[in-house]
Length: 193
Image (cartoon, rainbow, N blue to C red; front, side, top):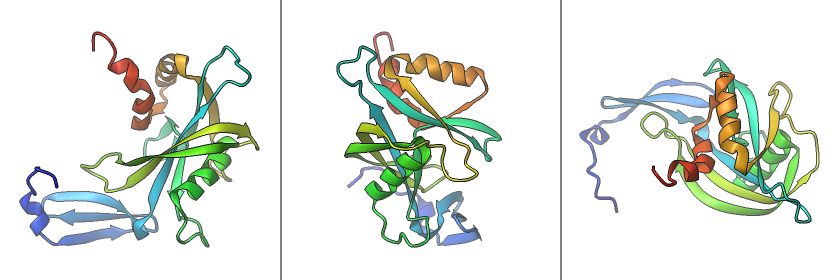
């Protein structure tokens, strides 16, 4: 159990302010926040493409770039998607959704999967959680790019060059998803940090 005190706002009833097909806006006390409708969560994939036959180019990570309407610009992200948001997939597992999304978005399938854990991306404003899954043993099985209308661009980036790649994307006014800190974190915590 946490030692953090529970704020008095939790004693207030939760009010539904607005509901759409995928999100709802709610209020509890002085807090306004957004939740996913129908209890939908997300799966986020850390897809590591290892070199084959001892190739000297090192490990790569698969990133996706797509236009995000709330930002008004493209965003560089880890592949991800909603769990159970398609008709006929009630009860879809995190792993099933992650495998589907990895193939749809990047055109790769993974031989090995590891569930890293559940995380919250912006807990002061959004209640949405996501399950982070690590995918390895990648094989190219299709073109990627997402489903119709998503317009996803796939990037296979050497881990050793990731910071430079992200800086170049930022210089082109591409938004950078906070989850990329998973990969950049080692450099942020290195000597002199």
